[in-house]
Amino acid sequence: MTTAAKTTNRPLWLSIEEKLLRLDAKGLAGERKEQEIRKIAAELDGDGYNVSRHGGNMLQLRSAMDDMLNAGRPLMKDFNDAVAGFSLEDLGNPYEATTRFLDKLGKTWGKLWLTDRREIVMEKIEKRRLDLLIKKARELSGDEGIRFLIGENVAAGVITAELEITDEKLAEVEALIAREKAERDKVFELLEAVSEKSDEEKVRHLFDNDVSEKLILEIAKISQDAIDSAKKAMEEELAEKQRLAEEEAARKKAEKEGPSLDAIPADEMLEHIESIREIMEFSDVEREIRVMCEQSAIPKALVDIAVSDPDKLDELEKAAEG
Image (cartoon, rainbow, N blue to C red):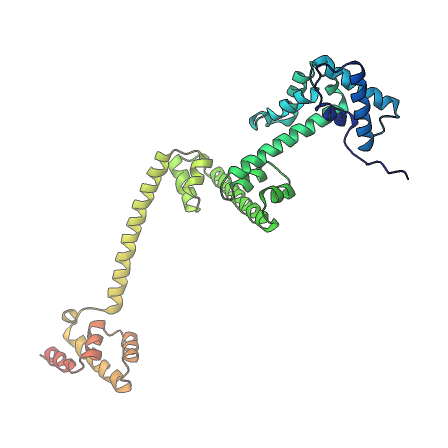
């Protein structure tokens, strides 16, 4: 019975180089070299490649073996060491990093410049960058790791899998980032409207539109001194407005309550007392008495006496009559 060969999507050259990694190039010649070639060819056959019975593929294996022997070491080791040596800062632009990588390794391994191999180099470098991004994200606290990967345009599925979070959590952070972006866009629009104004006027405009001090510093690039100066002026204005409002409230309260007892003219005192007695004949409920007295514009000081000590109204009446 024939066993079906395994299938693979890995390029043959890459699988060959990875097989060569286990070899010691020293003393690998003659029959020993042939033994290793036949052994690797058989392994590659088992991995789904047709090498032993394919002249071109066998030639590719022999060529890779010769390149290794000429270099004195497996070339894939140089490849892996170079990839592992990249820092996140080195990989800001993976395309440029790939070019630098090939410029360096291509001097001893010219075949890396072949199109199919260049693509693998790019994939390895991008994988290195992704691994470093994930490593950094895992070191950040709270939701900062999620935010970091979103900002680096890492795929959603990778973020949820590598940071072990739910789709709902990712959506929550994405929504928060969207709201923050909208807030920043709002700040830019507000600044555009006052672009010709002084820094203090800009700060006032932004504060009036509920922009946080943090965003003013970050986006408007206005100094802390200018912000503090504007805040102080606004606080003073607010305190003055508060004072005036309190004075107006006190005036209206006094106007509503009417004059004090000693400020009520005698003739008006008599009229008010008469009105109070008529109201008290209609109701003896304090709340109702107060409402009706207020409607009749009777001073509050007199109403307070009527509901607390009605007998005192007689004394006030006599005093007013002279």
